[in-house]
Image (cartoon, rainbow, N blue to C red; front, side, top):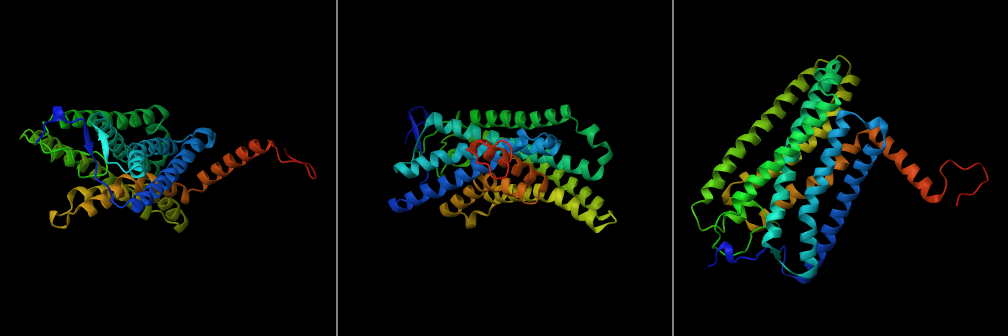
Length: 324
């Protein structure tokens, strides 16, 4: 038995004890991480460089990519390093920092997705008021509110979780630091404080979820009233990426935390944790760019300029000339 004052590090849950499989996990997660970096990096760079993408939708998408980039960078690098060096250790301070940033970025992303549903509602249901209701200052305020909400939420839960006395060892039953596995190490009834905070959080999440659902009810009603099939298809195409991202984010996280105890197992918990921490940041760039012709044109233009600059041709060369 130990207490929290004597704990200097935690032991994370390993995916496997077999060295060959550890190296396989290293290459797999390294590849996923690089794909996520590339996808979100391209979205951030393209939106920042293209003047035609200075609209509320792309402003919120840029913020979403920043959050995705931060959230996957909080979890995967430590996992990749542990798999490479065959270790499970993370320092006490490192665990607290990882927990804080995981909560901060995930909650901020959920709040931002709620704001983005309001953006889709305005553009479909009140297009004539779009510029008034979602001006530059309003967009900045809503994005700042999402980031600020995530920061204070994470600060509150992290401080409360690591103020609890821990006396049930230092083995965290997850591949990264999160609240439920750490609460299981507590030896005090004061863990009820965190349970109460989690219950209050559930009501907040439910409130955001209800807001998103009501927004899309109004959106679908407005879309179905559009007389032309082409107009309905265009409206659905505008909302489909956001709806897909919200569904992926909410469904994986909800099932991970609310699944029946009868089907719970360490292997399933690992798979679900990967599903809601790794999969959304990796797939979100693909989801948002796959059906967005405007973004693909801007990305193609950016890549053309980049390739021209790297080969020494800022303009298309004349016939018969060489670029160096």
